[in-house]
Amino acid sequence: MTDSPTRRALITGITGQDGSYLAEFLLDRGYEVVGMVRRSSTVNYERIAHLMDRLEFHSGDLLDQMSMVEAIREHAPHEVYNLAAQSFVQTSFGQPVLTGETTALGVTRMLDAIRLVDPSIRFYQASSSEMFGKVHEVPQTEATPFHPRSPYGVAKVYGHWITVNYRESYGLHACSGMLFNHESPRRGLEFVTRKISHGAVQIALGQATELRLGNLDAKRDWGFAGDYVDAMWRMLQLDEPEDFVICTGETHTVREFCQAAFARVGLDWEKHVVIDHKYYRPAEVDLLVGDGSLAAERLDWRPSVGFVELVEMMVDADLALLEGRLRHLS
Ligand code: NAP
Ligand code: G4F
Image (cartoon, rainbow, N blue to C red):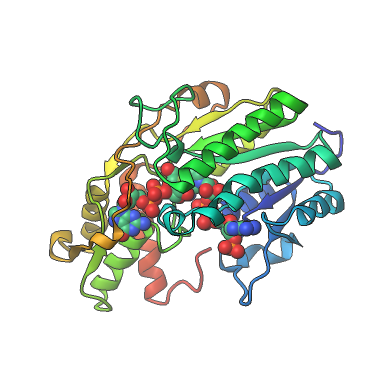
């Protein structure tokens, strides 16, 4: 650690679900927080609207090496959290090269920027349980071999190993969190949990009649995003960098998520959910469930939100949003 009194963090992906929770978390701990944001034709700061006057921004893109070098040079962060990615698995089948450029090579670009400008910076890489893919053991631990099932999963394996490689080659304080699925009211509408919570509420309010979904048998270890950003921070506070699985240790099917979400608004999911094969994937990850004992032991980190509580939190937030009681997701 440096001896600067105020810690400064650079977050890539600050406009995303995790970036917004991490920014809040770090600001609450007295950090100065800089978000790297990419240019778009419409403003896309909905998840961080409530934080805007407390944040600094740097225009950059994971596809552009110099913008990352400049971000590090200009803002001199002590910690870098690389959360930016093309993060949607389904899209990675249609845009595999873009996914590789962003989600895989983008990690190398950031690591090189750190190595060249200030190798004392601590680096967090957003690795994923998608790397376990067609799982070789149940539950999955830090030692479970990877077998990715999508271009996204393959790109994350690259990002994971290049982080390990820069740690071993150049002595960077660089680590990966192998995070299992984590959700929240700020989850993108294309991901299955938010699609279900939002869809169930739309049906309950008479704004839709059906919800079209793909594979209901897939099982995921779903936690709350607000808990998971705490684990990211804890990883960067260790004296020696190490990689961790972050999970709840419980797994549920997409069907169970539907059941709980529709029940929250007093509906029978079976009357409204329609199977649509366009949402099936060329290769599926059937079962994810993690073993978080290393994180519990070394980081003293445990999830605080259970499955039913998470579903109800998401449905209640969508109800407030669609009834006009909430102006935005924060
Ligand atoms: P998310 O909501 O999809 O956010 C992704 C972020 O990446 C957005 O801020 C997006 O910016 C940014 N981004 C995309 N392409 C970029 C580029 N070329 N240059 C700069 N920024 C770019 O994802 P999330 O759920 O917060 O996940 C955060 C990270 O954790 C991702 O790396 C994801 O793959 C990983 N992860 C997520 C989970 C999970 O369950 N949520 C689990 C394991 C790992 P725009 O707003 O401009 O699009
Ligand atoms: O919500 P999903 O799209 O998330 P997925 O594929 O597990 O990926 C998420 O978690 C990863 C961690 O393991 C992250 F790395 C990644 O960035 C992302 O955050 O799909 C979950 C499951 C899949 O098995 C999918 O086939 O739900 C199934 N599903 C069924 N119907 C559907 C749908 N998924 C989506 N998105 N939309 C459907 O209509």
